[in-house]
Amino acid sequence: MINEQIRDKEIRLIGENGEQLGIMSSKDAMKMAIEAELDLVKIAPTAKPPVCKIIDYRKYRYEQAKREKEAKKKQKVTEVKEIRLSPNIDDNDLNTKANQAKKFLDKGDKVKVTLRFRGREMAHISSNKQILDVFLEKLGDIASVEKQAKLEGRSMSMVVTGKK
Image (tube, rainbow, N blue to C red; front, side, top):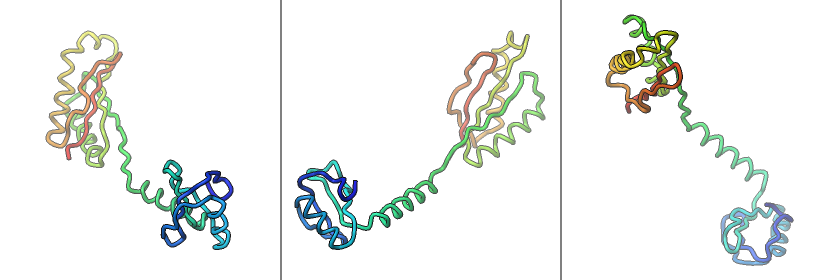
């Protein structure tokens, strides 16, 4: 809230240089802000009494947006990459998929490994779980299981993350 939007009877006022000016009525604070040709901004509305500051509102909004943008830069977004396998996959193909998963894990992404079953392959689900175990073994010491292998419809999947 700024200027006339502040309807509180009493507020704690902070000057433009950061000095405490004490508790006063919002009308008196508004007069002081007008004299300084600045804005009266409520910065802590939940405090008793609410805290207001005399500042240039446009500059305040600019600095706030700048801080938010800087905080957003430092965030790391992890993606979940998916690798699909089939029950009759060859060793070389499995090695290729494992190498791709290593690249994803090195970048800091999570990897969802999905083993898809089609037709009669559904009859041999338990024996094909070993493919996921072999895949995890190939990732070796750089990966850890975040979500264990689980059968969901016609596919079995697990989520793997990189070790730090």
